[in-house]
Image (cartoon, rainbow, N blue to C red):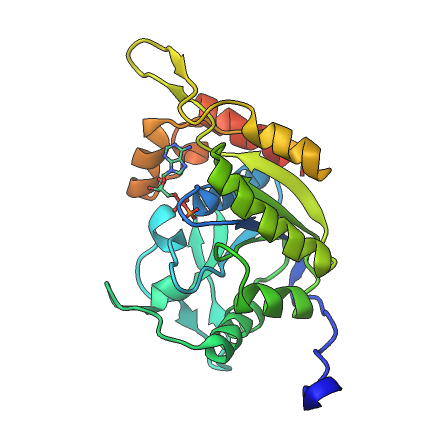
Length: 259
Ligand code: ADP
């Protein structure tokens, strides 16, 4: 191979997993992990067997979002038994760290850590594995998309121009790596005041939908900015299970149906 680099291993399926959907974003803090766990729960509500892999190794937030504590069990053969939370099978490096402990890994360590979480886990017959990607476009993305057959990626963005510009970079990477894009989700789309019910378009409105059209992507839907999403997430009970009749749960279910 050029420059003496070994050719990447061909993309291969993950044992015990039929489909993989990854959730990405251009930058952090846009609600990518929140979207990933709620979409996973919405898919579960459709009757599918669903797992979540937290690939955001440097900022794992899935255990907190799903109320998971402690380390996953390890079988005699060294294979992880994933955590179970709200009916999902879940793996995250966050479950293996002590509170406040950082992951201080260079790229190769990170990619081998990810490979272990993904391939040395007994997923046990999932219809869908939802992967919460790190924000941006880095080593972990490259390794994952080269080695694993990902069926499709959804990109989460806020309506702000900056978040959308960053989202475009993530989209550019996926296109260049030949990874199918399922579409764009606008999170924190608008604010509904809990006391008056008035709607405020804090970041402007329709930005993500226009951007999706411009980029030739499907627009999968908008999630409002609501206090209960943050509150439920902090309690480890995402709105899709914690408040299934709420507007935000409906929004997540609507998007899951389009995947
Ligand atoms: P990311 O994975 O993009 O870094 P997170 O999913 O961790 O972002 O969300 C960041 C913070 O914003 C969390 O505290 C989360 O509860 C909150 N949050 C995300 N989406 C919403 C929303 N639609 N309404 C209210 N709070 C939200």
